[in-house]
View 1 (tube, rainbow, N blue to C red):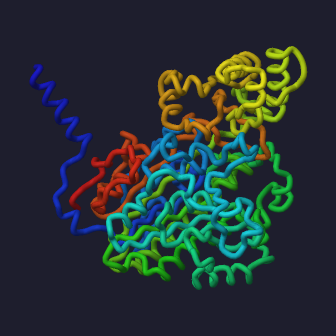
View 2: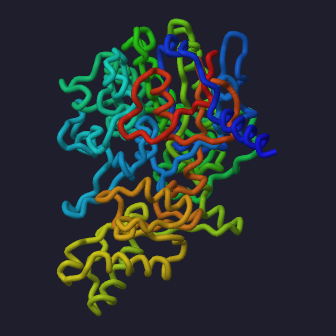
Length: 558
């Protein structure tokens, strides 16, 4: 009986680890690896709206999401083990395989107490942006704040003549996917409404001719108006009316309900299928201009579709808008895949496609409250005022000293002058803030201080693992509050993503191509597994800080 049980254990372990594959995979590397990221793409969009997707295949044409779900390895419950799931940390994780405690990208922005300034995650004052520096709010951008290499960097480090290109409307998405050695990294500058980059990637300061052609085409479209309307067949799973639309400027421009009026060339037009099309056209132009997929070495094209995130923040994940942008993405992916099938020698069989997201999103907290689910908003600026008054009363008996210099996304940055002038230890102030937050502020579940992090005193379970893998000293707050589920900091967004809860961390992972065993995998995968898996398939080292595993269960000789 014991022997039989051992055989069963060995068999299960062997099945979970995957069958060995032969050396033939080394001779049949993909010509192009295409990494697609849909910003704020929750895992359930593929299951809720699947009936509206194009068929996986129709004649010689392939579909979008359905094609990937049927032809590839599909992990419905991909996971980020991050404390705060945001665009910067999410994109930094995908192709580094590294957690923020090493990569340094724990937040979209952090507060530099000594300078008294907020620091953006890809900000670099040492390099100019191409041609439009005065319009760029970040005074130059590069991967300077990212520690370690990306998968694209490792292709280059190995000596392969690989071309690496990264494109997204958001600068942080494009840069953190592209890494240090990319041949081209492009993002959209919203004020000039042009594709730009930085001197880090183009030292001469001039964009390539193909990018200028894209920008000229955009200039011709500016001012044109199109209509974004509901499709002919809806799922019935989305809410008819947007809830608690707080960003009135955007609502006024787009309109609060379908049909939405899209004025091309405006920043708000990016919160629509128009933004998807701009990104697709740029990706196709890059493929043509660099001959991606046509060389001897494997090339990498990383593309992040930012428009979904803009729509989600504005209307919420339960809105009809979130459903319609998903359907628009399905059609766009089908168009893109069929283009690749014709453009890449050997067709799609020579393309390895990865699709995932950088984070999810919770439902609108105001709507949840109406449905009797505990939820709410926390006004961080009011909290800072109240907290400073409390600390002054507690420690000096009067006044309103500036103990907390900034609160940003539940990260509390202390002003060292406040407690050093009083000869107080920083840990004492941190402890008092923790006590105040847990006792006085509705919606706070846990609090971690820098002193506790240094002493490895983490909360239990998954939450503690998230803290240990995310907290980065000097960038994360001196105190970090963890809200209860469905609580968010007050902002101009209908809803935001700021936590490590299931709705923010659970996203799909799909991988399709040669040597990939198709099927739905309930075992789950972590986003840090993507980079080492890609590295294994092309025979290079994983990125320097990678902690993921090779998803061996999806590999096959076929």
